[in-house]
Structures are given as structure tokens and as C-alpha cells.
Length: 338
Image 1 (cartoon, rainbow, N blue to C red):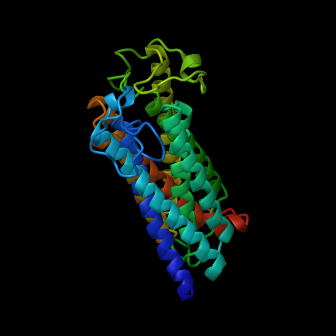
Image 2 (image 1 turned 120 degrees about the vertical axis):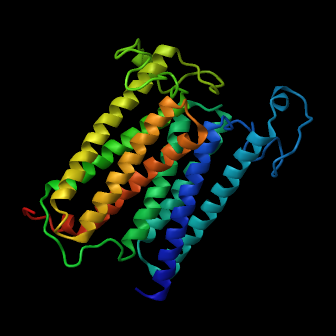
Image 3 (image 1 turned 30 degrees about the vertical axis):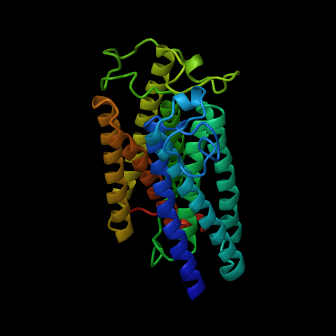
């Protein structure tokens, strides 16, 4: 690896960490009900710097909250710095290294679309489908940055190559799919303010099957100019959303446990298998604990933000494992018993 490539690897790794912090800041804004702290975009009450007071009159100025406005603008500032970093990263890949330049460029396109989603989040008054897509956009940027870091480096590779059964890459891909769906469901829970509709665990509202309304709960688009802050759905619709997220957690956890079992079988083949076994097991245990704590402790802000951060760590763990298995996948894998 030459010097220019080493610099690009370090830059993409730093931007991955920075993207994770932007993701956590976005969760903090959303979960502290600061998404409409600034009712305009990209300025805040017409100012590029968060104002300390607003005297323009009208309903928006009457609802002015400096702390919420400050959180929202801080999120915009750091997201803007991330966008500039991605633009410079793409320039370096085209100008110096020529390693995965199209992947680096796709990150620039994605961050522009993410900025548009951020604007629509405000202008469409926290429309749930936009809020959910904004979360998925942030996860996508984080994932692509980490994938770019891995693909242009020599981190997490088998040396020498290890023969594995073809079921392992398939299981990793399937688990990754379930996790992405679960992250989307988590975003839908948050966007519709459904996290506290079931205050008990493992039952919901002291019942195993409380009243639900799945049709209303999963209506993606509502017409008309509606302010969605605080949620507009009925209790039955929110219950349907919350229960679906719990069911998704069971499905995703089952797939992860199967993957952990397979890694356990191969743990003596290579030290990386044991490392992945430990990392994924710890991330799963942490995420389940945070999810249950959110319910029993009535969604404390720190735990709720950590829950989103934990989902991101699980996602990056699976992507790292997929990167490690990639040379094996290209060789179409071979049947082998541990």
C-alpha cells in the first residue's frame, strides 16, 4: 500500500467515526423532540447561527426553544462538515489512488440526497416516512464509508485463506438483510412515537395480544400539511408498530444466534472467527439489553440514543465479516467441516 492509499484509508476511517457521531447526534435531535427546533431550512429562524431569541412574531417564534434550536443547528453543522469530508475523499480517490473511485463518488451523491431528506424532514413537519428514510440514509453513509475503508485496506483478512462451508456467507447476507429491516422498523417506531405504547415487557399493555391496527400503523404517506410532532396515529396503530418491531427483534436475533453458532464451530480455524464471535455476541447482548431497558425505564434519552448506536455497531460488525469472507465468496466457496 503506497503513501497516498494509506492517507485515503486513514481519512475514510476518520470519516466513518465522524459519520457515526453524526448518526448519534441525529438520534439525539429526534428523541429529544428537537426536529422542528428550527422551522426553516437551512437557516434557523432566518439565521445561519442559532439565535438566542426570536422576536418576529407568529406561531413559530412563540414555540422558540433555544436548546432545541441549538441541537438542530449543531446537527446541521456537523452533517455539513461530513459532506465536505466526503467530497474531499472522492477527490482523493479520483486524483491519487484510483481505488474504488466510483464507491467514493457514490457517497457524495448519497450525502446530497441525505441533505435533501434533512430539508424535507423540516419542511414536511416530521413526516414519518421521511424521518425513517433519513435514518436509513445515515446508516447507508456509515456503512459505505466503512466498506470503503475495509476494501482499500488489508484489515480483517484471512491469511492464509480458510476453507468454509458455503452456508456461512449466505447466513451472513440473510442476517444483514434482517438487520436492515429491523433498523427501518426501529426508525418507524421512533418516527411515529410508538416506543412507549407498550410500557411492559415481555407483554404489551399487560396482554400478549393487545388491540392493534396494522393498516393505519403502516400507512406510509398521509396527505395534507400535517404536523407529525408527537404523532398522529391511534393507540392501536402505534401498538401494531411496536409489536412488529418486537417480532422483528426475535427474527433478527434468531438469525444472529445461528450465525454465532456457526462462528463457534469455526473458532479454531482462524483467530478472526473467535474475534467475530466475541464482537457480534457482545453487540447483540448490548442491543437487546438496551431495547428492554428503553421499555422498562420509559425511554431515557441516553439509552435510546445508545440503542441506535448499538444497531450501527451490529451493522458494521456484519459488514466486516462479509468483507472478510469476500475472497472466499469470489472463489464460490468450498465445502469443509470445522
